[in-house]
Length: 127
Image 1 (cartoon, rainbow, N blue to C red):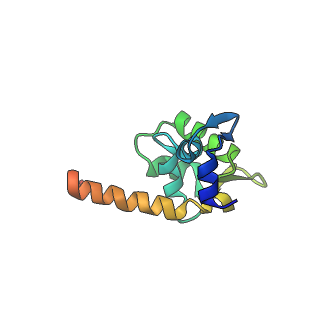
Image 2 (image 1 turned 45 degrees about the vertical axis):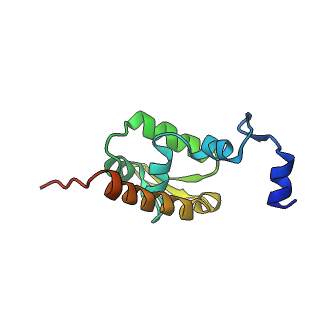
């Protein structure tokens, strides 16, 4: 079924036992909220450890980061790899193949954010 036919039939979309009436709502079920897209943007360039993400994302609490990573992992957007051969325990997060499909969208969001800052705001630099 092509996209036009799909839109004409207006199906409901079920993801995570939640019914959406629009593809945008379905997408936001997976990547919506204040922090998910921020976390995903930091994983674009490759694997990151939990503490690296924590340092790179000021303002996010440890609990929120942990919960968001668990949700992204449950939705098969992020892969969590645990290395337990020798202490200390090492955990790395990467985008899954499905998560990689978000990279072009995330890059556009970053570009639009920069445009918004230039147009509606300003850049502040620590001295």
